[in-house]
Length: 477
Image (tube, rainbow, N blue to C red; front, side):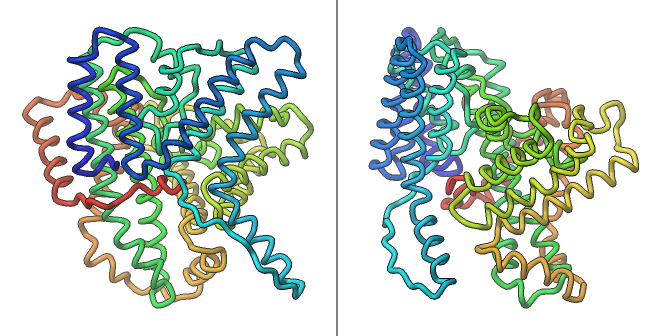
């Protein structure tokens, strides 16, 4: 079920009304109802997916209890390994089996050996990468004794399958979200209104900005060999805004919808295109995944506490693994490695933590240095996004080389993309003015008639541009 679908427009108010007016007196009933609603939401794509998420959840629930009762380190390590094998095994089978088989066949083909591969004809379960990492973090935190395991199976199942963030994040830690299922929730009007504002902004970004950019991105990437260099640059820029507004739009909707039910989810994006270097960009982009890899992979590998070359190794590992997490394609691995190459010089010269505060924190506009830094970071990010968007690595290199080799004739797209370019400019202005907030409408201090006029204009544009089958990019991951 898509957030931008008519089914969800009917589903959400029904769930909201039952949650607050029928089962609101009993915490366990609320959790059970959220679990049921979440399974309906997830099963809407394919009911067969439910067995997978239920199996993964039950395994980690019982392993969590077993970890708390085990006294010997050897047994605790064995139990953690079981959780890793089950979760990563399922993820690997459904998402990466065919990739490894095909890569193995291609490797032998380079030596003239032709193999007959056997691949699995299976559907990739929606959001498997997200809920797998969410469930797995619970087992790891229980193993590390950072979290007491829950014995409330309903609360745990609801935590893993919580429908607002189930299929595309944020990837919530059990230390943050699970305790919220264990305490009584009462309707908070202020929190709910803030959630509706944030969800509206997220839907606007998805439907009005991302989906409009997608039309031209798809056309440009499909016909890149016939276009001018300036048009290819425009395609890369459009994709940068498409993927940002698509993914951060989903996150805003997820966080906003969760607030309607009394839950607070972690912030997943903090205006990443205002970053002054790649290190800052990755502190602001898909924060839940970046911090997941930091805490559960980078630090266990030694983080920055080991020798220089081992730190470089660790940096490449987390970026390449992060790329591979996104999909079974060499383009994602190259995208991750390229970001590692961007990051390493910053670390080598101890510049990776230079920009920890908000850009232009004490002024309305950035200075010349900040403008140049933001511009360079955006250009490097767009180059990397070409690999992320391309169907294969060869196409990505061809696309980038075409930008350098083709004449920079005036881009025809400029003449019939005025609306898309206009909403991107509006997006930049709005987000720049709200860069110190979690979302632009967090402090709605505009005069009420003006504020409601803005809401109505946004709603009108959403209604006019909504595409019923326009899925979110990150659903494929």
